[in-house]
Length: 138
Image (cartoon, rainbow, N blue to C red; front, side, top):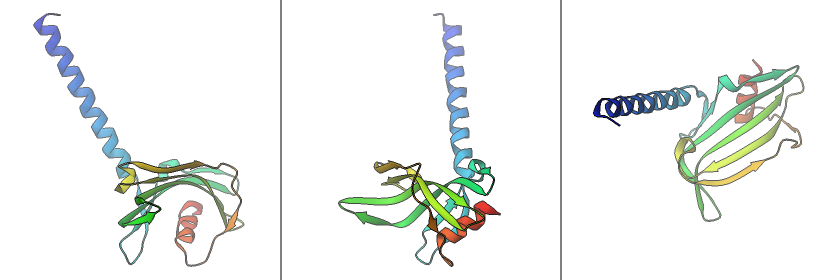
């Protein structure tokens, strides 16, 4: 490979990395703050993932903790969930969950469970789940 072709190749790779970094930052920016509690933990929803079918709405949500939650010997700083809401019947069910050692799903994956046919649970008034249900069903 001659010197001119090598410089072009390096330039192309640099541009590709810059584009990938830009896409990654944009993906993070899509999370919308839905609720923050007194201890500084925040719940986000990704509006770009909303899927509606009749009275049902699916959405990805992120629980980001200011202080670690301890489960067994693991420190959990964030949880990503795929949730489904029945907007008419005020119900919710969990479809997928992953728990992470770092904030915003960074760090080690501590736990993963894909549960597409989980049972429906009522949306409790005044809860974070109600905040998410209202956001998803608006």
